[in-house]
Length: 153
Image (cartoon, rainbow, N blue to C red):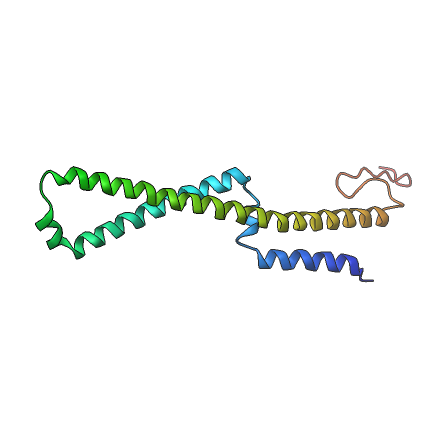
């Protein structure tokens, strides 16, 4: 006989695993701080790469104007300006990344807690079912020491 409660639990678990296979289940392996730190680090690396690509594109597009207007004394000022804007650019993206990944983790945590609750229910249900099936026996199938009194060896 099919038990509807068991089927519902297994269906909820299977739907969650299929829907959130790559995102929330992987996220559940991290603590909040570790998850946010890792993704903020990747955000800093990607924003660094993007900033210097933008600067290089600007330099290549306006190369003639830059060379004609730039003097030897201005190099340090230009580098200081570039570094100032780099710090601001990375700081803004770091703050945005921190907020986004913290919120993403908190939202996913609710779903993961519900998933773990369903897994615990299923485990307890299966454990209770196994106890009912083995009510008249002593021991289990692993390492069961049975002694047949009728046989002589």
